[in-house]
Image 1: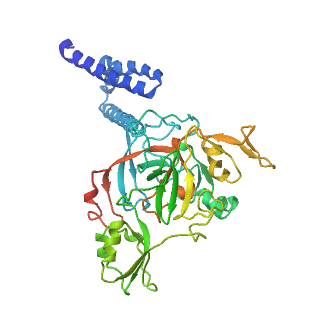
Image 2: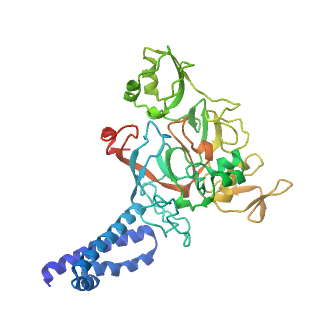
Image 3: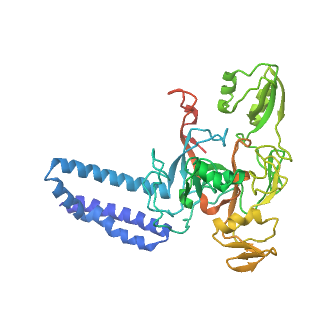
Length: 448
């Protein structure tokens, strides 16, 4: 072996990889992983295991090819899994709740380092599959081994108005025959027995195996949020009017629909556009500020009026659907004021505010809670009238404000549900068109 050539390069590779591994161990905070350094030494310098495999492979060409492919596959799985856990992960926008900011069919790369990667809590899982096996719908993971919540240090924290990917808070219980629907909504609207009989059996998922959602974080821990006539205010200040935020309007025409080519050129999702002959016009046309001004200029448009839901609520704003699922006098367009719980902050519990915090206390933070007949609260066996939050919480809303099931319908998002921040749209396709016209070329490699 050439000491000045191969050996020197091997040691250089070892030093580089050992340094990177050590930095990762320091970031990870579990120093037992330093025992991985001998493995790096084996692959970079010693190569005894590789030599042994090469001797075996030399006996058969078929075996050599098989071991070659096996080596490549194992390497690819390990590297991609490592990248997905600690750095970034691919994600597809499945619904129109973020139109016109993020579109249905956008493919995103989500940064895990933006807020700090969360270590796997359910490590026994099939690589590259989130929670179900393609085709069969069976779980792709085992809960035989479970860890507690731990997040590594990130480049920053969730900020107000960030796009955020997170685990669906109500996704801990899933109806097998309606996995995309909210189990708890079904229970409130009908009954637990009916929901399970009609759409069951039930699946129970750990936090890191819940379905992923993407919304805009409109309020962070400690903020006070209020929606007034469809417009959002946080701590008394109006939210910035981002270009993609849209509400629905009643658009009355002179008797003819707006040309679909015109609507498509304006960027409308035609799946959300419905024309009523009896109006005549569009009862609920989703408009951004820019589209609103353009629609007003069309020759066959007679009037444009905002749709604002006020109390008493109409569907979908019944108390059984809007968080906290009791009568509050709120609607989706007139909601709050609502304080967002912060880690270390304490609240005095009352019969009135218990619906706001009960799921946090019992489910997200794992306490037992009982309310005695005389109205006292017993948490973990101790009588108390206060509760101190163990995590930060966030309030998420879709930019498509009248077509978004968000925190107004399922409440707060816990800190341990945060997955990452979308950084780039690497591909975007329109399901209404055929290839290659379905590719949205202007959105390719768009940084967010």
